[in-house]
Length: 345
Image (cartoon, rainbow, N blue to C red; front, side):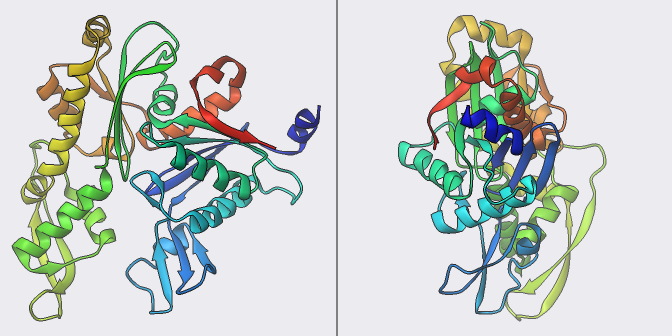
């Protein structure tokens, strides 16, 4: 009765708590928040100065007394206090709630998460103001958000390429039959570009510049029209600002290693898949979700390496959070997809 009463005054929410970005789905309203998982704090204290977009603008540009940081690493909480402050800020902004009304929250977590890491997510959510915290595995949420029939007795292969991790899972009967998690994603691609610029051009660039290069001219497979772009940074030898022109071909070569690891993870998952479900995948193919799925040519390369049809889900960046929203909307019917370890008060 109390839960029903509280439900009248609060909007339940689903959260994709990602290494790079956090998305929030508000029940009956849809996606209401999409911001970087970045927090700016004063050095030596837990005083939060900015969260999300404002904090990301400070990355690499802060004075000595301010640090812009990501409280999540490889998809899990690395700094409990800062993650809690970030969650609280996002919940308050998304929910626009009164102080005494607390929402139910579903948080998407990596499939390989440990019990300690689960507890950290749940405790952060509770301390941030939730009255109930449920957990759902990210590949399951991505599959649901992509419209896959996860409760049916057939094989569906989802590849969720996030900022810190790539999750590959074969799903059947509302469970992960086979799953592989590798701590390689968009961030590793950015680092590969940073390393390439330093090694080949002697140019030091930051994460934001590398991400811009990846989005602008990055690719996983040969494209019809190769392009170039100018990249600004600091000359490693002289220490002075410099601009270098780079090609999409060399960026693709720089991305070879993280992409190879992702494809290897997909093939390893397929090798472990039971024969009956593997037969289903010949028809259903591979579905790509997550921001990394937007890398041009990646679907074509995975199709070439696996021999399976590959498609990118609609709006792959929001697939996971849309999945959490659908679980919220159909909680009784989809309760079996939740991970043990949630909590309520």
